Image 1: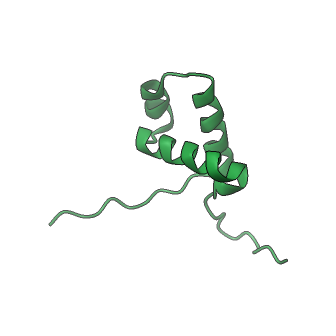
Image 2: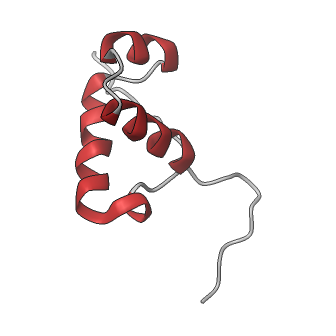
Length: 70
């Protein structure tokens, strides 16, 4: 009866700041505990950033925010 881990969503700003901190060589174990994010997610964000820059780091939808047109 194991429930699947629900996917958490993080803002683009958090992802970008994390990727930048990774580039500076911060301790990922400490950063993981500080932010409550898995190191697996960190490396996924780093890969996405490497492929498509900051625009590849999709953020969590803000509840109640209008959708962008155009």
